[in-house]
Image 1 (cartoon, rainbow, N blue to C red):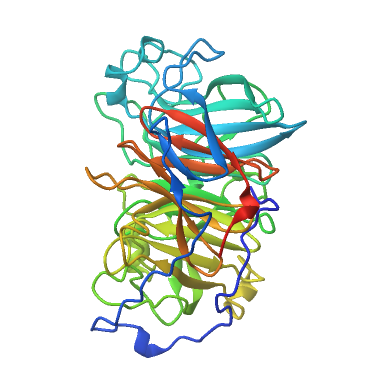
Image 2 (image 1 turned 120 degrees about the horizontal axis):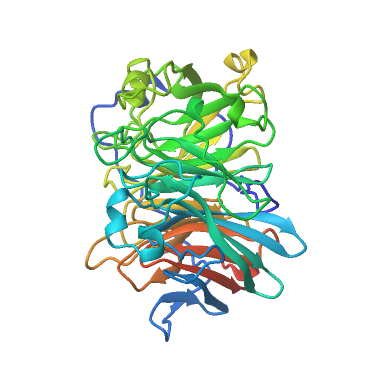
Length: 457
């Protein structure tokens, strides 16, 4: 959801630099720029509880944890991933939290989940038990700093990874899977589901079929046009947009398209084999329409690339604001440590006139050092207009961080997680004072507060 915490353009070069043909199909490595850094909010202070190190002046509170009893008789599930914060007014918000669970997780889930049956489950195992994937919703009072309600809001889905809030106050929950019916499950998966927050309890699980069947990761909506931008977590992913037939009514269907760089069909933005896409250079974009978006063959990205679609390295978190959006490519770049892409829509986005006035794509950040930025995943924006990125790297030595990125593209550490899991679902309260973030497993949801104005360049 767009708010006053919209990301500013900063001082990064904004003028379109033109498309130099020498940048396309470059066969030799160019020198890798070093990742710029910033002081940020100052050094991280060791957490006496051993969970999350933060800068001086910041603190956290655990507001929800795995197996906490919920108001619907169920308990908080594991694998908390993407999350959105939706304003309910009167100092109250709804935190809609994805749970990246598959049928196999029923074997280790709490009895309340392992035996849960519901007519509102999208899919079940043969025994009638609801698949555990879906969303839980927390109704939280910002003023009193306490939970009012907590309940399952979507169930019966698989691997709900990320998603995004909408300008009309709902959450789009994305399945990161392409499973088809088999001897365990009854339905096809790989869809987006819209979760309302206007009443407690389970929503009707209606897959938004025209938004495509693929390894969905995240979604962001342009409030001006109602167009939804979608990422795909694959090594050879595309970047998609969905043009709805009716603005704000996604269930009414629409058109799914993939991004193409003008004059550069099948462009490879990953920079794995050559520095084909330099940092800060702008490229004109166009879009191709994809037919059969519900294909059971997991071939959308293959067909889209054959038609000229640009390749991206594991598209993940995405955020829209100030008429532009940013999305993470988790293992993009020469060192495969991660990239952040930036897209500015056309003033005529989705209309015939955009052919003469195209949108533009830029490689905003490419990491050259794992100690500075390593496998960025979910992202949000701070009240000061900085990106805040959740790292998702699992190694015995590396600790995942929340990484800040200034409008100029300078990276700094904001938090360090002292646990072998990932941070996910970072999102701000409407007033910009509270940052909510998940610990993936075992599930914990944190509220972080502090002096957001104390940033040091």
